[in-house]
Image 1 (cartoon, rainbow, N blue to C red):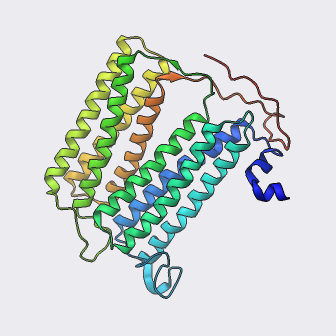
Image 2: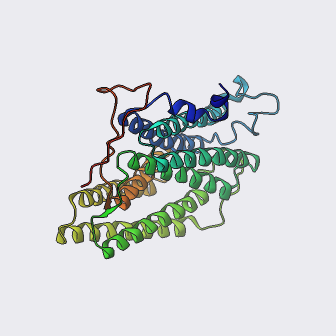
Image 3: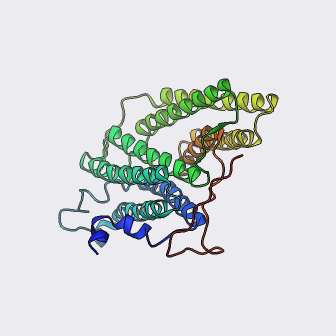
Length: 331
């Protein structure tokens, strides 16, 4: 019992070996929930519910939770706060599953704890957002922190499906550099997108909320230009990978990214010409998540680390004891 109190994860790891499928499912859950909380956070903004709970960590000076008097806005804002606990539970499941995996995969465990730290930090940042009455720069930082969570959950999801053998390059150095540059351009695109939202009409509340001091048309054109850089760069990459007869995995990831980018572009231009209807803006937020996930998948598709082949004690079952490890298969 003393050991269980001192190091509960080690205590559980000695008594439970999750099937690799369980670890993958935990990683998938963490990834899905990181997307969900970004989309629900967007819904808070788009419904004007950002100050539905007007203080933090309480919902109001008189109540910890939303009350009937706060109406729909209070329910939406408080519901999004509760989503943080659901995300924390998903991340906690991933941490436990990754720590208990045999053979032990320290990188997965570190990714799990990184997810936990981002969730906790962004929870505090969300509180600061309310306390500063939706300062647009704090709101943008809150969104970017959510994208940081999406980054580490995506990495955990990808790594849970890979082995731990030394990376074997699938493409040459010039292609790897081009993909790294494309990833950096994608990150710039996300950051500029926060300026578009921060200077646009969806302030997050019906009251007089401060906006970013940018001309909306100008920053929107800048965002569009950055998007075209990423799209054209992806098209060039798809063609180059085809001509170089690169790995089928890398080619497939590049095609996936191009498809998601084109779909996101259609949504983006449509919402622009229709004067930012809430539903399309919400779809654009979801699209931004999918674009970033596809970008990270391409970034890690330049090398192969084998398959995650930790052995399971029984067909499709978890075990209460540690299983003998198998050496990950090399490509």
